[in-house]
Length: 439
Image 1 (cartoon, rainbow, N blue to C red):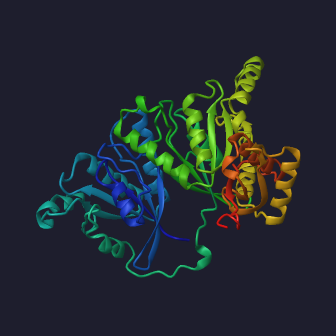
Image 2: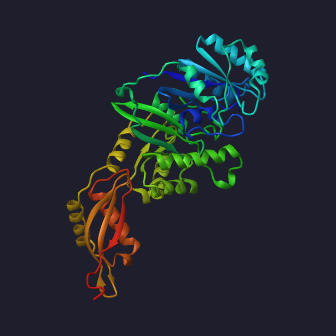
Image 3: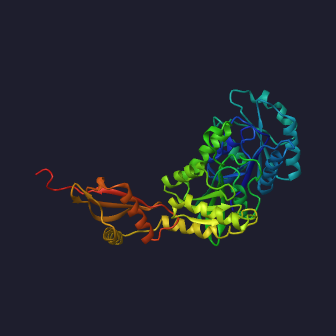
């Protein structure tokens, strides 16, 4: 097993910047606003023949509001999971009462703690690290997470000897599953329910989740990476700078995932923002499963009305499986994995040229292509052009004149006959060259 290292400290000392520097990614959301990071974020570090898992945490504070308590709880849980702890302080601000509080907490934990002083670029270590010794910990390590100075020394101090990691210990991302939806529809509650633990912060206030949290999961010998994303509101309602970055991270998560699990509040229904986000998912060609949450507690009459409305509003994405669930109580959640597996398997399904050409002929027999200037459009053959999502390339004459309605008909025909559920099918048309055109 790879060793685990947690980064802890008060808000805005550069924990997420250090996380990104060590993992050589931009997975952690960085902002000058304190409290941007709230949930635990895990990443893999592979530097100088040293490999370990790093955990980014929210700031530990004395604030007694409900969100502050939940953030601190997440950080304390990371300390409990870790083999070693990086205690990060701000070299420019010096040691604060909050730093002393965190130092006491770490001493009681019994973990191996490394005191790291950040933001030391252009500063004299002998002057600006003097008060760090007051914390009574090991020799402070000066670094600059922004510029990368001192990172090599930090890694070598954490693990003095190089490691040899066996290939069977390599982790697999498996199916990347992004949980997406508007704020306060129950995405984090659903994430925790699927994991079977309180992994991410759940609160009634919209916008609790700020970053896209990547969480590995294994179920029935199949690997997944759950991505709990921030809720996306209408642009005119977004005024908070961290929320703007959160929306960007959510859209990036959709682009980089395999399957999107889209959550809709049954009591609110499908909004214009939902339709825009679902359109973005389909445009990106991602697998799609829809979860209608908060189905519990609704009367039979309300359920019947909601179902009729949802069927009408979601008719344009009939390829996606729809589940009616309660993330809070767990009803229907287990069935989601079967649809996620189906969507992924259909997205990467291998198609053959002969089978696609046969289906193309059937489609034309059932519904002939239209006439263009007195001549019928001829579609000659089809072949696979890629997968995830499935891409079907059709060759023929005058294909540029095909109306959009017939193109949609062919895409739906292939989707139905090939039983490609949970994934959009993209159809591309190419004109065959006329060998006598220049004669």
